[in-house]
Length: 271
Length: 219
Image 1 (cartoon, rainbow over the protein chains, first blue to last red):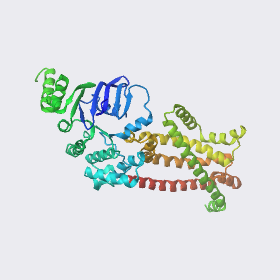
Image 2: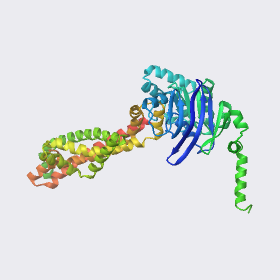
Image 3: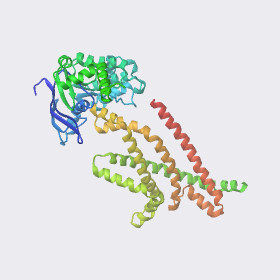
Image 4: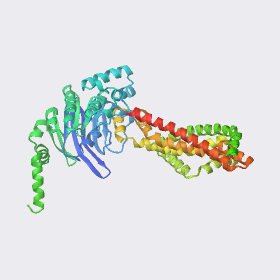
């Protein structure tokens, strides 16, 4: 593992019982690199990034990150290693998962105070700085329920950043949001990218992936279909599976027409 | 009517002593049930299988036994086996032990009912399990615990009336001794019923207001 590589996955395979989620996934992430993982649903993207911070165990292969080397299978990872990984890798969820019984600022302060034993005043100050960054300082004493989805997700980003992670994982951060709220969350992520944060991002926002990501990984049918520099992969994919996926997402009207045509054909033409 | 009120007035001081005993028993049994119930819930949720099995076995068996039998076991059977408990202690152990099984299940259900994403979020932030439990899971489970727990509390108060069978001087005991003196079972039991009803009324009003308060504070 070269110094520059912070996450290195080798032949990682994951099953839930007998159901294959993904297989043979190998991927290197360099410091300050932004990797976007795209692909059809059910391809195993979300589970893959959850395996990276070990919210899920994986079955085969190895994963090196932050000086730890994890192997797949039943072997238990020591609690201290898991906690070190969780402390240094931040995660943002599709469903936000803010703590509903705490106010916005308490949500952000909780982990630094409990895990890093940071004094309350310092935690508060840093939480405010983070809220300023995402433009929500005036919401600090409000409960998450009163926030819009976009605001909740921005708070969730602050909550993860409060632990000063070295790597950030985003699990479809905008797919639960109304379309007009997507921009504010993507804006916050883009800002992080510019500041040099190492990030892995599962997303359905192709335009955003192209703009922000250095590397794009297309996962389909439980494996990596194609991976490379963002523009290259998204504009001129080489593999057939990647082409197929991209033509469907980038030209939805065309895909709809094809779908209708195929159906009509299968029903024996126009009636 | 006239004689009934006279009889009530005559025996009221005895009944009030009984009220004191009933309240003390309820309080002590509730404390035992809450603490032991919480331990049972944690044991059932534990990854250590022996703890889980032991707690599950306890809950399933104790729940299935009528409270009266448990009280007799604590008072008579344990004495036969050499462990002599006084009436009130046997009552607290019996009622507390029984209600611990019920409260344990309430706690467990509420803890499991907290959204899985909450646990994941806490874990992803590096919180050790004990911190996640204390700061994230339990505060949220509390709202799910409150209504069924207060419900069980009113059942507990009523079940304390069984302790008169093991010579504890609660309300029911006083009613029983009064009616054996004046041979007016209707009047004397009615007074006991009225007192239990007042308990229930006060408790349900009080707890309903508390629940409402908690809910309001949450939103």
